[in-house]
Length: 260
Image (cartoon, rainbow, N blue to C red; front, side):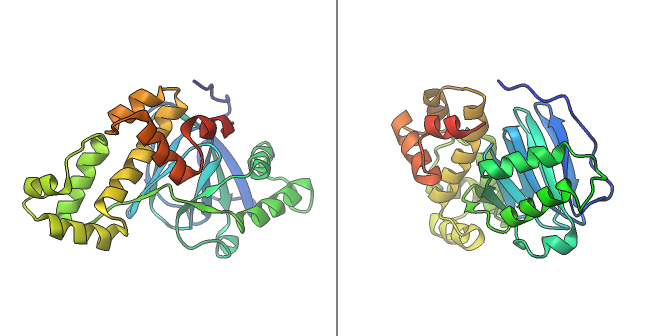
C-alpha cells in the first residue's frame, strides 16, 4: 500500500500560466463529481489508479498512464483505493494543438519527472525562466504521447446499458449474451449487433476490457493474481495473465514492476 504525499490543494478557478500542475491527494473512495474546465487536462496519478468517466465511457489510469481530457468535456474522477492525483492543465489555446478526444496515454519517465517538477513551482512562475522552459518541454511531450486501449465505451441503448451497468457492478458475472438477452427481453443476435454498433466492440471484447480495467486497482493494491483472476470470471490465472499480456504488453507482475 502506498502513502500519499502531504500536499493537497483545491482545484483552481482559473489558470495563471499556460501550463500548470496541481496536486490533490485522493483518499480511498474519493470522487470528484461531474465537472468541466475551459482548459485541457492530463489526469495523472503518481501513485494509485484513477477512474475517469465521461458521458461516452470510462478510462482506467494506473501509474505510467494518464488520460487526456480536452476543454469543456464533462468528466468525473474517482479513486477506489486512493490516488496521488497530479493534474496537468493546458490553456485552451494550446490544447487546440492536442487530440480533440479523450484517451489514455503512456507517460514516459521524462514526462513523469516534468509533471513532478512543475507541481513544485509556484503558480506565478516566470514563463520566460526555468519554469517556462519546463512547460515548453511538457507541451512537446504531450504532442507525441501514445494512446493505449484502457477505455471502456458505454452503450446508450437502454437494454445494453442495463447489461453494462450490471457487469460493471459484478465483472465476474459469466452469463452468456444469450442469457443476458433472456434477462432483458431481447435476442442474442440483436444485442450482439447493437453492442458493436454502439461501442465498436463485440460483447466478449467489451467484457474483457471491463475485466482488465477492474483488475488494475486490485493489482496495484497488492491482491494476488489468482484471486483477482477467479473473481473476474477467468478459469485460471494463466488465462487472465494471457489476456493482460495481449492488451498491455506484459504480464501483471512485470507491468506492476514498471510502475513507480
